[in-house]
Length: 188
Image 1 (cartoon, one colour):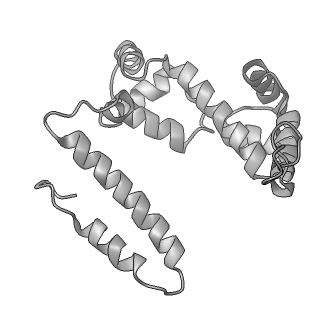
Image 2: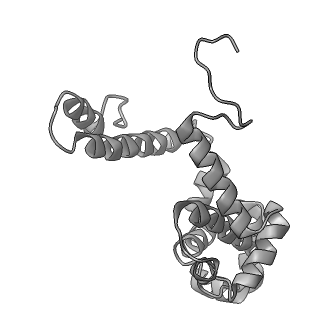
């Protein structure tokens, strides 16, 4: 969308691509739809009457936004409040207060949650060993990661991976989450 409310070039290009039947159309449409969604959100949130959600406001903050980018792109770094504050260019007290106010969680709690969310994703998407995943997300050992993962998820990383594999296999075979086969049109 343009600031005047009319369709923008991304929408025009998306419409053009939908009408084509060329090799690579689906990946192009996927990227264009991502761009269209993000452009629409940015335009909508930029309006004077808009009240953007907190996550969007945080990303534009020079302290908390910069810190979130660092945490998201470099989770393996041995981050401390002092190191993150230094990267943000403010004192530790200012950093901790501002991050907590804008994000709603203390920086180290957010970092721990992010690392465990990445772990859960990597366990499902890759065959990497837990030791390797631990290093990728900033833990010194598989044991440390396993203890933290169990505390939050109630299961060990290996069990999480196995459960996800069983769930995925069941979905591929047409079995619902209850273990019952899907029956279409049978009335059961």
